[in-house]
Length: 129
Image 1 (cartoon, rainbow, N blue to C red):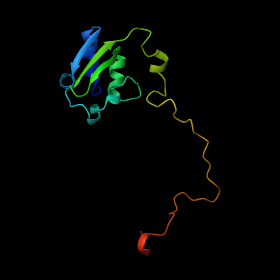
Image 2: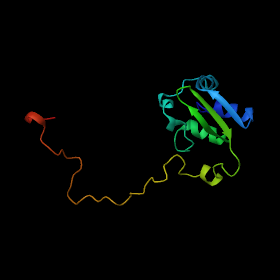
Image 3: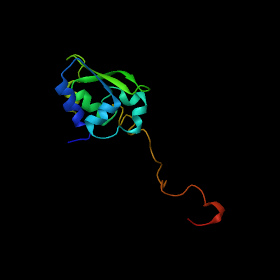
Image 4: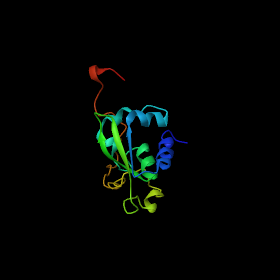
């Protein structure tokens, strides 16, 4: 069981269209403090690659709305079937990676004879490392 799974259980049990919660209530439900990154609106985004807690509320069928960082409040709103993440995306082996992962693969070439582990400059002051 993951750290944020109790939030999923809570949201599923609530079953309401909207579940307003304070950050303190969320911390009480999960039995732990939210990470420092909760101070940034982006942490509360509904991007499934954002963080582990995002996956929990999305899996419960909710999205965040009306995030009030200063007031430490958020509203979880139930999503319709058309807004939900497609099942094919949920079970994707690439889940957890950004869609652009690997887009630059094969575009960088190392010239023959170049040693990338070799220092570029002599140590400062002429001393050995």
